Length: 151
Image (tube, rainbow, N blue to C red; front, side, top):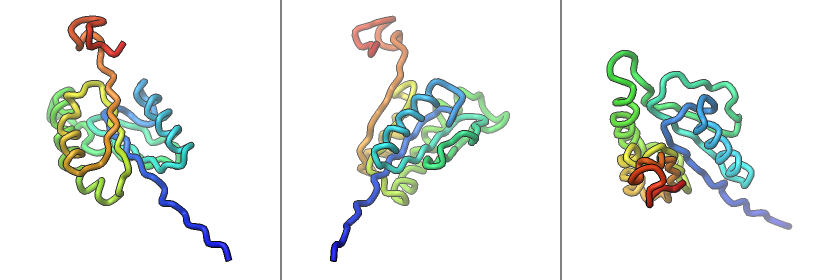
């Protein structure tokens, strides 16, 4: 008698402020990252925040997408909500989200590290490994093409 032991499928959570599955360059990048993990046997969840109207059409059925803390209508300026308030609310909710799903890694996608600081702090407390993908503009690193520029 041969008994096969199956490993638990590894789980990845992708978090960020971007429309998903389409609507910006970030959408395409994240979709490509998700596809790479899916091709290597991972389970992928995408958690987005601070956006307005995101389409669910075109989402790969293997990717579980959830929008939390969307842009509220008429209460605050969009930039204030998406860049300052929503990340704090997401960080508050992450312990319950990560505990319920038992993620092996979290991929944080963002334009600037400062937006995601509350999220990083929450993930560090949880103890889940973090991959951070920052697409910071070169001028944010001491001028265009400055010494800290990733470009």
